[in-house]
Length: 250
Length: 250
Image (cartoon, rainbow over all chains, first blue to last red; front, side, top):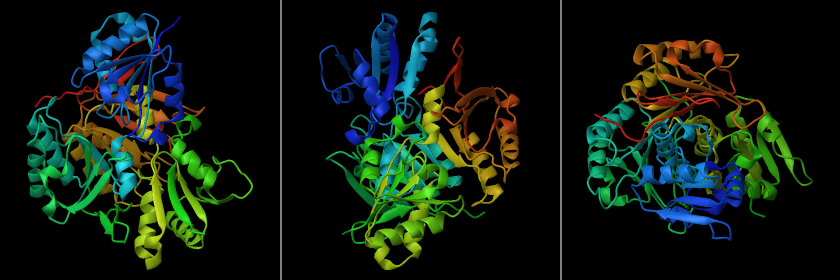
């Protein structure tokens, strides 16, 4: 029996945003490996072993999945959103590169999903409708000066931005610094969207000007979208639409 | 009868990458509006009118969809990939902002999808596994100096990059210029992935060093991924894995 590893994206939360490709792979798996809340999104069934692990043990989890596959198991490593965006796919390939040669020849696939910024953007309108960037604000794996520098250059390039992992209990202050950098680089009227837990029952969307943005508007379930200088707000009775036009001038 | 507009992403091509949310909306629609090849991805059925239009008439198409919805029809505007990434969502909101006031109060939703860069990245490994940007290389709607400037700043920020619409028959030369800008800004060993028609029968993936990249490796069905300075290639017998590590140093 040949084992395999599929690194699969479960999307932002709503089961209607899980691709049929991922659903089929989940049905065929013997083992699910991942961070506790994501593993729990996969219903228990006979023949399926669910391996839950805590946050910040990504490399251990990746190695565990590869060992299981090498022993013949059919393993899904679950991420929320898309597995290739600030999620488990990179960790699995880091483990492969540092691991035994035979891991390279395993059947390894990445199954894409709807990443948080695209679900958030869809809910708000089309704020990422022109050139944009995605920056992970967690300084667990990179020093703060790198983050600050990227924010400044992204503002200079006039990208719209999606800011992942803006704030957590263990990193209460970084997002405040990020807002300071944005305030030095962008006008006060710049549009920000705080999109929390999009597509779940806890969904909350808040559209504010940069001048009015506060660190406590974000938590670990929030993705923050920052408009470009061209981003527009269309006021309406059901809450505004936010979009970035397709065209840009020099 | 209340009409609505849903701007829906069909994903990169494989039907198993169409979300159940989009499939359900397609079943409930009376009208499909979009670019010819995308409309043809939706099977004909009684009660469904398919309105095909050519490329580069995005605003006309958007207005048509809004007029249909205002008259009580249930309209899907189809895009490939995700509708919010270089696709129809921005065009619809541009039309709403410039249109009659009552369009703002229509039931308008954006249904996210798997965008081309995420499908391409999944196939290659995890090249977008760290901070990255997405740039549309078409100069139909923005002047070339803006594109060149963004490429330079993205390289300076050490983002991985996804380059959409690198080359078409009407724009045969822009991508060559883009490669020149990248060569001025990045080392010769920088990893590029030419991902063509991912998830379709025409899929083709090519991993090359920047020094070996040639304009003719891209066409209008290609998305080009550019690694950051940290992107790694894992050689193996089935074709290499490419990934960008999660960590960065100052």
